[in-house]
Structures are given as structure tokens and as C-alpha cells.
Image (cartoon, rainbow, N blue to C red; front, side, top):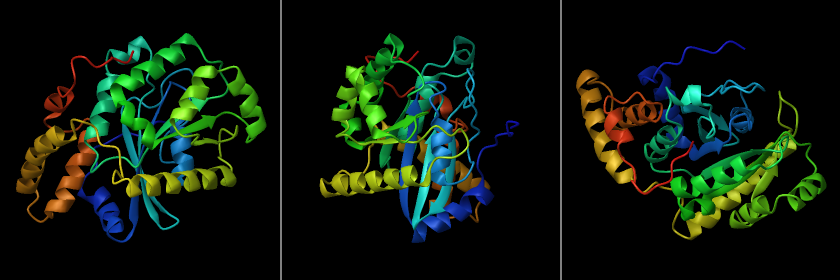
Length: 282
């Protein structure tokens, strides 16, 4: 599949999704994982359409945060696909993966209902994987596990087989416990995710959202969300001056969507919002 030319979202692309959001309840999801884990493939399965480019290879297909949405089963799914956290050095010269993920986290209004960590069953757990998990702690914070769902890719839908694999990966067992055993297998078909797997994901997500709503914390919000919002307010004002017929709500939706993909005119300010003591992903 040829890679499509990616352009920042504008009023034409986003007016439809804004109108849908009025009648459909949103489910905002961010996909995180290693290079080649199957994040884009998982996102396509959740959306029910080929929104993100996906292929099995050793190079990164997703080179910046990408956004896709779809109305399905009475909900509006908004999904953000991120670059692999272990992207190769030649990619990191043009893309700062940590900054891209962090910017996506605090530019999404008003936060994520779920953080989906995609793990590939096709590879053994390595020291690099354990290092990645440790660094994700620094990037996301401990509260992220209340919103996290583990997606196991490249494995037949067999819980017994997964159980055998977990016996050899104690760190993943600990991670699963921290996520309150919220995990789902997405199968081994590179083209399609089985219907029953997507249905199980939906059930887990529904339960997760209800539990967090009951606790008064419906979605995960990055600690720099409010600072980022103040920056994006300036983007919104600029956009409305250039597009006087666009409503304030639509304008804010557009500038947020653009910002998550690196198209904010104040992107340098957004990238500068970080904790100097926070771990870096490499």
C-alpha cells in the first residue's frame, strides 16, 4: 500500500465528526507500543476500517501521531496512533517520539478514555521491552494504569496459549495485574481482526469507562493538559480570525486535531511542556 500524503485536518474533514459527536458519545483512545507491535493494525480493527497504514516490516510506518475516527455501534471512536517508542535512530533524527506522544496526550480534549498498549506475541520479551515499560511509567504516570488495556497482537485467539507465554514473562504478568487483567488477543491475521476479539475489546472498554466514571475520573488527562489548552486557545483565536464563519467549538476541535499531529503554529511551545525529571524514550 502506498503511503498517503498526510495533510493537517481542516474544516471540511472535521465538521462531520463534530456533528457526529453531538449525537454519539465519544470513546477517545491512544495507541502506544514498540515499533512493529501492530498498533496501526489494531487501530484499524477498533475503527472497523483501514484508517491507518499497516504492514509487517522492520521500519516504522507511523512516523508521527495520526488521528482517525469512525462511528460504530452507537459510539464515535477517536483513535490516535503513535510512532513506535523504540523507533530507529535514523527516524529519531527527524521525529522525537517522546515529544510526539506527550503532545498527543495533552492536546486531546478533554482526555483519553483508554490507553491501549499493544504487545506483539511474535517476539520474546527482551531487556529493551522492560526498559520501554519503565520509561512509559515516566511518560504516563502511575494513574495511567487505571485507563490501560493490553492488546496482544500476532497470536491466535487462545487464552491458554497466552497463559503459557505469560509464565515465561513475569514482567508482563505484573503489568497485566496493574491493568486489572484488562487484556485482549487480536489474532494473527495481518489483514483482519476477528469479530469476537473486537467485541471483547468493546466489552472491556465499556466496563473500564463505567468504572472510571463511577470514581469521578472518566478519562486520563496529562498533567500539562491545562497549560497546553491555554496555548491552543491562541491557535483557536487565530483560526477564527481567518475563518469567521466557523463556530468556536469547531475551531477548537480543528486546532486540537492539528496540534496532535504537529501542525500547531505554536508547536515549539507545546513541545517545550515537559518535566525535566521525566524519563526519555529512546
